[in-house]
Length: 232
Image (tube, rainbow, N blue to C red; front, side, top):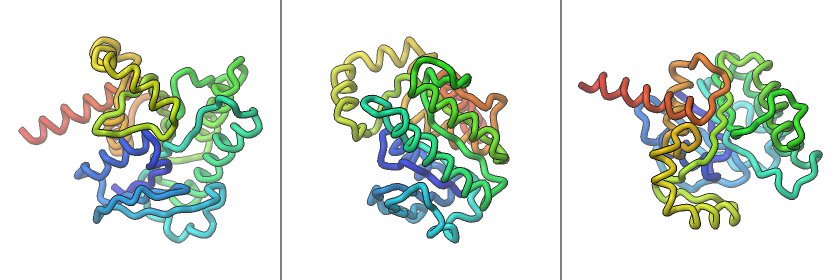
C-alpha cells in the first residue's frame, strides 16, 4: 500500500508515520507539510510546501497512491471563524479535491476530533467547521472516506505535541494517563492505536464512515488479532 500523509510533524501525524514505517503493509509513504520530519527511511519521501492549498506544482508526484492520512489541523482557540475555516476546511478540501482527481480509487482518512458537529449548526465554531469539512469529504467520491474522531490521545514512544499548551497538559496529566487508558477505552486512545487503525481501515474498510475513539480502538484490536492469527 502506498500512502500520502499530511501533518507528519504533529502529534497524531508522528504516531501515524511511525506505524506506517513499521508496517509490512505499507511500502511507500509520502509526507506533505510546511516542514519535513527529517527522518531517513527507504520507504519515506518528503515534500515541504509553503502553500498547502495549491498542490498543482507537485501533482505529478501524487499519482498511484492507495490512501491518504490527513492529520493536519490546529486548535480553534483564539482564531476567528474565517481564519479557522481557511485552515481547517479550505486547506483540507483543496488537498482532497486534487487527490480524488488524481487517485479516484484512494481511501481518504481525516482526523477531526471528538465532538465534531455533523449538523453544522451547533454553538461550537470549531465543531461546526470540522463537521462541514467531514460532510464535504464524504461527498467527494473517494473509494472510501473515513472520519476519525479521537478524544483524549495518549502520545507514546517519545512523541510530543508541537503546541506548548498541549505539552504542558500532557505533562501534568501523565501520571493519570495509564489509568485513564485502561479504564476509559471509549474516550482514550493512543498515537499507536490511531496509526494502526488508519492502516487497517485503508486496507480492509470499516462498516462506519465516522469512527469515534471506541471504534478506532476496536479497529486496531481487530487488525492486531488478525495479524496474530496469521502468524500463528
